[in-house]
Structure formats: C-alpha cells, structure tokens
Image (cartoon, rainbow, N blue to C red; front, side):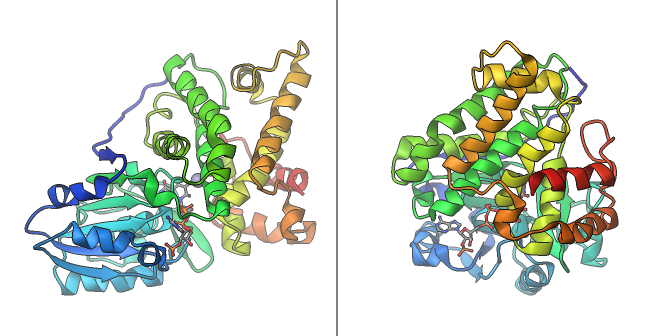
Length: 385
Ligand code: NZQ
Ligand code: ZN
C-alpha cells in the first residue's frame, strides 16, 4: 500500500425527512446565502422546505448556477457575499451548485484576482480561509458533498479548484429529494460514480485490500441497483444505495494509498467544454476505449475487476479482460447511455480540437504512471468513435 494522508471533516446526515435538521446544523446567528441552480429546487418544493427549516436567520438567495458552473455567474454571487456580509453558504442542488458554492466560498475571501483560484495543475488554491458552507444534495453523482474539490468552467475550459477549506461542514443526503430527477440525470449519476470508483481501482496492484474490496463493493452495488433506481425512481432503498455509493466513491476513502488514473475525467472535461456533452456522458464513451488501449498497463487489475466484479470464469486472460470491458459497456448502455463519440456526431475531424485543448491544459502525461501522451489520447479517441 502507498503512503497516504486522509482527512475528511464533513458531517453527513442521511435519510428521509432530514431537512428538519438544518436548524441545528446551520449556526444560529448566521447570515445565510442559499445557492441553487436553474430552478428545479423551486419547482419541486425543496427550496421552500429548506427556508422553512431555517427560522430566525437572515437568509438571501442566489439562483441560476448552470450545469458546468461558469466563473462569471459565480462572481455575481461573490459580490452578494461581500456586500451582505454573508457568513454561511448553503448549496441546494447537484454537483454544479455544490462546486460553484465552493468557488464562491473561496473567492469571497480572496483579495487577488479570482482567476488565480482555478488551478489547472491540481495544486491547492492560494487561500487560507473560505466562507463555511453546507450542502443539501439533490443529485447523487459527483461526491462533491463530501470532498474539497470543484470543477469550474471559464471560457470553454473546465478547471479544477482544490482547497483544504472547501470541505462542506455538513451535507444532508435525503434520497427522496432525488426522486424528481429525470432518468438521464439518474443514469449520469450511476455512471459518474462507477467511473470515479474504477479510476481509483483499475490501475496496478499495491496490495491495498480494503480499498480494492470497498471499490468492488461500490461497483457491485451500482450494478445491482442501477437499473432498478432508473426504472423505479421512488424505490427508496435502491436510490438510498446509489446516493451513499456516490458519496463514498469520491470522499478520499477508496483513493487513499492506491495509484489513481484520472484520464477518463481529464479527456472527458475537454469534450464537455468543447461540445457541451454532460460530464458523465463523456465518461461512458471514454472508459471502454481507454481500457482497450491500456489493457497491458492495467492487465492485473482488469483481470481482478473481471473476476471479482463481473464474476467472469473464462480461463483465457485476454478473453476475460475483453469480456469485462464489453460487460461494462453493456451496463452503461442498459442505463440508456451512449458509448461512442459518433453517437454525439463527433467525428475524427474534431479530434484536433480536443488534443489542442488537452495540450493547452497540460494534460500531456496522464494516467497512473504519467506515460499517457497526447498521441495515446488520440488513439483513445479513435477507439471511442
Ligand atoms: O439546475 P437545476 O434546475 O437544479 O437542474 C439540474 C441540472 O439541470 C438538475 N437537477 C438536479 N437535481 C435535481 C434536478 N432535476 C430534478 N430533480 C432534482 N432533484 O440536474 C441537472 C444537472 O445538474 P448538475 O449539478 O450539473 O449535475 P451533476 O451533479 O452531475 O454535476 C456535474 C458537475 O459536477 C462536476 C462536473 O464536472 C460538472 O461540472 N464534478 C464535480 C466533482 C467534484 N466536485 O468532486 C467530480 C466530478 O467528477 C465532476 O467533475
Ligand atoms: Zn465525475
């Protein structure tokens, strides 16, 4: 097992009717800014319940945070935080709202140019404090509710933001708040969670048994409940399992002490930024292609994945790997996800744009061993066609 440093201070409150705990979770004397997205929380009554559960506080609202939250939109909220002396932020929404709120929390406390907070090299943002925040999760996918990362869009580029001060103080995970999600977003959530897990698991072995078995547990749970939670949106147990898997897949636990390969996310972000395709939809297209191209580097873990997650008994190891890749593709497709770039009308002629963007963002040495060059990224795109 590799050395690691694991820190996660987020308080999780999970279950039905847990919004009534907001009053005790948000400091009594706080001036609160509630942040939300394009209006789903208004339409489905979540915002109203949140407001009811925050009595006797000065509460402001900021709506309109778009999917793939935009720097310019978030800076408008930063102005409100400064002008009204907001001292607690409450994000009510999915990954975009939670991520956007983390950025607002940092930028409101930074005296320099807020663009400095966007950290393409994954280094920590140059800040020593952030406005404290909590979240109410309405979309299980990103794990943003229990980690300190965010992805912010600025001028057709998606850039990570990291800080030790952006772990939410608390997150309320009431699976019933996610019942209103359209199927396509539920499928996104299943696939995003699946990919977060395999990017910390299908690398090379380091004898990290707890991390491997926890990752396998998440993957098997997603395979078990995926179709059910898609077809039966109000099946509480199935949805509760998805919600908890999404959180656990990206809160640092399964990634502690193991190699990680974020290639799928890095190429995926470029595709989202250029073509506007949903985050998880890019991942479903890229992951099978990446494994095709990186079979040798990931051989041992792909075999472990085939045996322990898909229970493939095939003797021939190459066939075992191929079966595991095709079962993964079939699983994504069973959720209604497309698994080819051509399904989104992306052609070879557009690869140069993607490669240029990877180069511009210095994504030229990806993978668990840093040997995935732009040439290999192009090969992956070719396989994903
Ligand atoms: O904006 P509203 O009207 O709320 O509608 C949203 C949005 O259109 C809708 N929605 C959310 N909850 C709903 C609902 N509709 C009905 N009922 C509900 N309960 O869903 C749409 C998508 O929301 P969004 O927040 O964009 O989706 P998601 O949670 O998938 O977040 C994607 C963003 O997270 C980033 C992605 O890059 C992307 O920007 N990620 C953040 C990560 C992190 N912080 O650790 C890691 C991830 O890998 C990812 O990169
Ligand atoms: Zn993701």
